[in-house]
Length: 444
Image: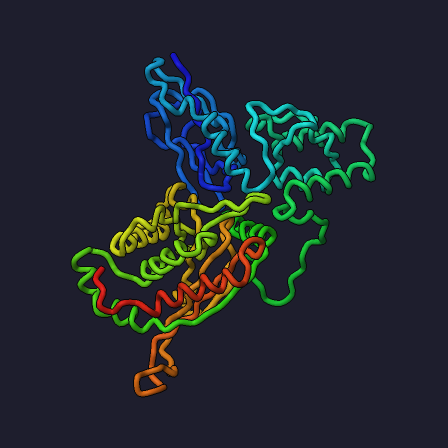
């Protein structure tokens, strides 16, 4: 008999942990290769984790609602023999490598094969752990010497809560004056822009009048945290422009029926917007980047995220990988496929990972413009507003005249840490010009 480790899979860039929603198997249950063992969730997507071997579930290492780091062993499966051990048995080290690469997006990080629990090595502490430490007066020396049971010896919420329990049972307690500054200093040094606000004691809210109290669902809570974290991370600036998209609108109206008949796909405006964005990213590659401490990471792959509303009202951002390698037909098919899967809750973790730039169509619901929040760890997001007919002044060979044109506002929110107003506005206007100069005689 041999044992195969089932690990928490990599779920996308900047994601270092996931929550276990439900176990479909328990110890002693038989399981087949690719059969669902558990459901997990992140702030981006819910997903299923399949078995990586045929066998019997020997051990489950985490409970439902536990938050588990990427790469951690979550269960063990007993197989019939060594021949059943697959590549996943060797994946923890690989997952650790991916995890370390993801963590670099958030904090200064020094990869090591094994982290010593000493103050001389740089240990990773999640925002939750640091927040608890600050609230409870745990010094950095205590954190550094605390035994961690997480991946690579990391201190988990369980570890720090056990520490607090033991400390309360002990008569000795460090002085707050010696403790608090150390934690505050480390919070500022390690995660100056991403730490949640300190928990404060508040009296229960009192509501007057005729109200209905609705509890946020898990995904809405995660989205809320993701948005606040983004604003605390990036220096947001938003620029606006307007463009005449008459040629694009008339061309789409002319070809959309033939396109659907031939390709069995609807032709929306989204792939046309993405096509223009791709051309401009190639001209201004810094827009397609991320920030790692004092380094700028310029992404060579162009992976376009498209914000999509779900039936629940929540928002999710599926990603078109290597979008620059697709023609308009390919973009249209990929856009429709991801949008349908998002609305039917069929997205996989890989469908929402590794985005490098995001497009959000605020015009879908009638808004003429918006000020979108950057989708971390990206540095820019483009919002396209509703297309409206308006009388505008146009230049003709006979002089200026007034005509009815299809007009649209564009807005670009960008990270002012590395994208200055000149580049942000130049890129935005370039996208507008691409849409205005749409060739009405083109094919798809």
